Length: 275
Image (tube, rainbow, N blue to C red; front, side, top):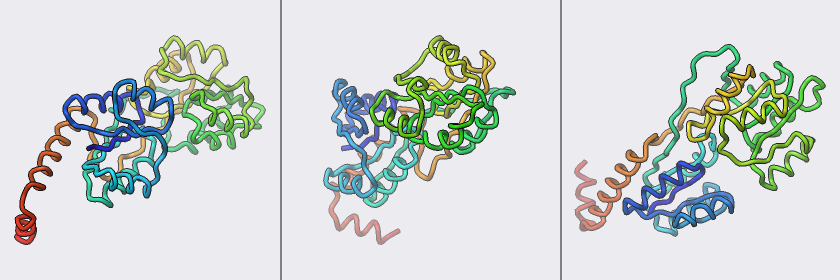
């Protein structure tokens, strides 16, 4: 059985492909809405956040044979927990990451390396700032941008209670909250920029499946500044950007492990001592 973190829409498609290829798995997601979509597709699914210890216990007690990390490219904590839990049990760890996009140089496209750097750059530019990076790091931008009379901060994020409560606790006015779930067409992006008089749009480089290209291209064509947070560099571990690569590696590893398990324990010891 494979344990798979499913944090994106393309991870769901990968999970479906693996099961169709005869690789049974348990998909792990964070929100009830996500678990409902996966179960509708016939995937065996659990819901809830796991720290490193909790994941290690689940992997051990569930007898899992490999870990596939399909969480969001910016989910650094999830990556670290999954990789550490797999290493603690000696399990293979494979990470699927969306292909990175390449952008031609543009005078209004500003690439930064962190949320904090993006917030500082937005403060320098002033104007009507639309934040599309989600609720997890919202306080970084609120601290830099709220209270400046030359800045209007609008946030576009998922319509969950946790996000709404966080916005209100930080002092973001209700009229400046766009609670909506994507993906978004270029036409919708343009309509939202126009409606809110956006002059600066902040986003993160999530990959093609995250529709970041639609946000970026439409904003630049409308004359907006775009602050793009570059994707974090992958940590150690095998990283794949194709479904086929992950499926082939998993199939080979699981087949090899089954062959080894059928060997006599004495044979395994002899092979280990001879190396």
